[in-house]
Image 1 (tube, rainbow, N blue to C red):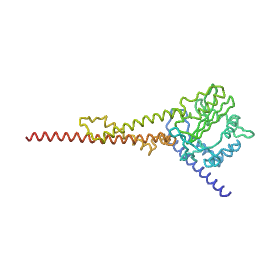
Image 2: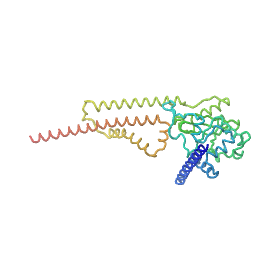
Image 3: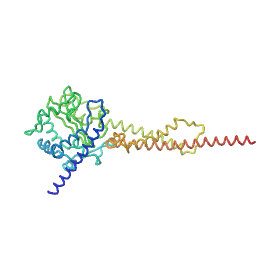
Image 4: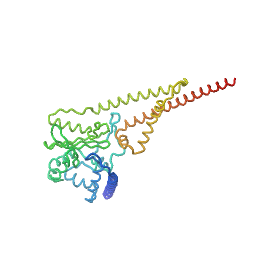
Length: 375
């Protein structure tokens, strides 16, 4: 028992240190970035990490211990956990990613980031979350316990300026009724919560699969669980569930179809170039060497160079995020870039042979003219 307690204490200390390290790192970046933005607000995971660090400093407890004592315990959230290992021991669902439309189990990095725990790495069950939503609807109380005053809950759910962002809640309207909600996702998991205050209705939808394609185009805060949760509210209010314009199945049908067509074109184009390059036919010296030809070759070499830069630097963070959340498409892009580079290599070989052929003909003509002059 003593060894187990020491182990837990060590884990808590590590999580505390990780949270402090990330919080101070985010704070340093904020202090360095004094540029004013045109938006009145912007959602930021870093803000929640900083808030979690403040909780640790003020309470004298680790963030995880504070959540257990002041939220999980009074709300009888007995199947809710603050670390991935603890949740896994109690039956955590296996996380999945979508690979060309197929769900593949994931057991890699970024499943749990201790230093970012306050931003979205708590684990719970649908039943436990229903207790949390009851407290949100019931002025901070669940059964005989209270975790927050009615005034605190009201403040938490109210946007400081309409159309901005409350304390963990986004507002909107559904079927003509005001709602508040919050989507969330990490590698292999996604969730959507909604509260309809007028009906004292709470909805929570969990899913143990997530890919970048789950997001609605240009609205990354709208994911598959968002559509399911909004559909449940519509059905409960007697409205038809219209769903999204494109389901996951349709999205992948289009994406896989596009990948197949572009891959077929790439293979065919490369095969034709290989036939010309390795064939016995000599290059035609009358072929013009234009800027267009050279630019085309350069463009075909640009793909691998760009991918190398994106992969080895942080010039475009979204590339690294896509590599984690949508590895199938990223892998295909890499393969196609290599294929295009091979095609560019063969076209460059043809160009060099053509230049040599032209120079050889020019040299023959000069020698012929010199011979005639001597005669």
